[in-house]
Length: 166
Image 1 (cartoon, rainbow, N blue to C red):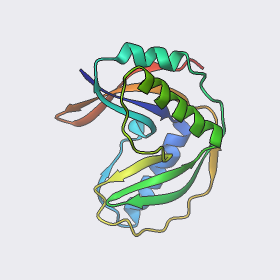
Image 2: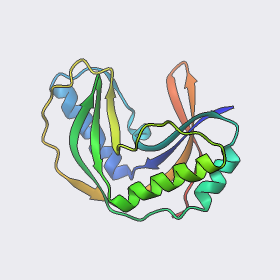
Image 3: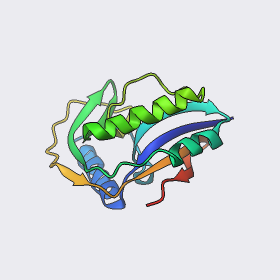
Image 4: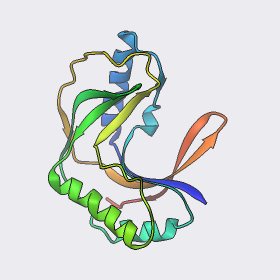
């Protein structure tokens, strides 16, 4: 069994921008567990423990990857989590829903939460009442990835099992 999830892997320039936002949050007194730059992503579908990696890969390979423009917008928070909102077109949300439907048709369950496009920046934040100007930044050169998540002594590590060809 593997713990799997499907993500939107961000371009390095966007990861660097988000890492800079994390530094700005720290400078404003935010403490917590910063998500490492290399692990910043937007989860499209969390699958959890499964032994169906090959079936998931086939679904990903046979579902056309959208080439939409996505945009970082404002910061948000939920409980002790700080995240960067991601503005996506309706067609991208339809892609995510199509993936979830195809997975369900193969008996592969995903987390029941609706898709809320965001990128987690800080977990266990000591405060979420921070205002920080975040200019809208748009991009297209992202990749859809199937990741395995493993818990280690150093924390959670992600291993790419499949990436959409560009």
